Image 1 (cartoon, rainbow, N blue to C red):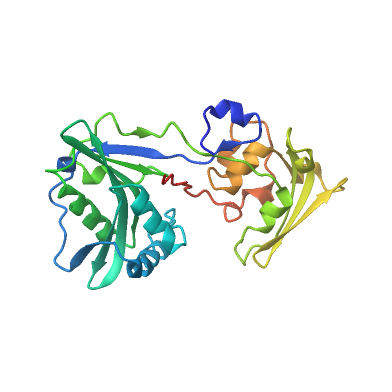
Image 2 (cartoon, rainbow, N blue to C red):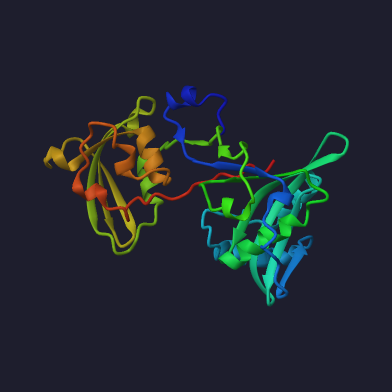
Length: 286
């Protein structure tokens, strides 16, 4: 959810899931040494047949946090409802390499801004092409805004940074409702073979509270709630439902999350392949 008050929802087990960054810049601020090469073609996507190349880019994107809603109608619906919604597909030697989706917003009588909703690229050359393409809007657009789930390398494309480059102050929040179902849906690395214990505190959903055993093998997790445990207490990790939410969605790894607490982290939980720290982004389209 996008809360009206983060502290209010945190009391009910929700926790921040994003560490988004906002960039705002003029097209003229993009360095002129980034240019579209002769082999790159940019197409305004208006036809359903172009949906498959978009999916191809999304699946092979170098910025893996990018996601595309898997329904052709979703693209068409956005375009019809959001006047000014655009998707541009980049192809190099007829191979899809990038796309951006954006919309235009009029501010005042003469000014118009651009909001980039999603950006995906399969290699750095394709990323260069995106910024070179955006510079072409210099005569028509006053400001370009882009929200990214992490502090990605954007500054190198700009001649200068102004004070509107900032952390997003309105991150989305997440809440785990069912511990067993949540862990059973996760695809772990097939090479992992671990047995983990944790004691969870959930002040709202009592069924989640208690001692849990996770058996991870062959890429899947078997989840068992225990009435009691004979294992060494040093092997049991103490967590709140808020902390577990951030661990599972990749907001933070366990050691970073607990570094300012007195909680002892069992060695088994320190394997970074179990719950890797990864960018998380929830795109708000409408």
